[in-house]
Length: 208
Image (tube, rainbow, N blue to C red):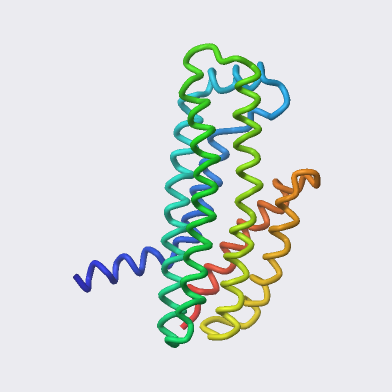
């Protein structure tokens, strides 16, 4: 039993990096059908349905890795002191919430890919595409909470360098900015958030 727990703990430690790799691979594989032209969206999903399903399947596995990483951070914070239990739980809950909302993106996109084996009404295709895009914006809210709780936890426990804590705290308002659809920053700042996850994960791995 101890060996299994050790292996799980070791795998979870790399969960942030695994999440980013699979998420990027998945969304690149799925491609982008756009949001404005319902007929074009329908044709894209009809022509590339299999590829889209594979891409979002990879992204979904990546989200599981993110949740596992959130769990690992919770355990790491809790090991420092019993008084950190709430911070650790907060990190895990926020991470799970982020994944749950992003699963909405995947579910809607996979639904459209699945029904596109037959002609899809352009209005329905456009509605589903815009719906999963809105889910993509919404998931920045729990992600902001994740970074905030993580940052506070790091600053209070110093399980890694203080710069990681401050960096995570700065990411929280950036997430809220990214969540505004009118600003159109989902792609640019979203990629930055993925890089930030890798940086933070590497910092945790290198920490003693």
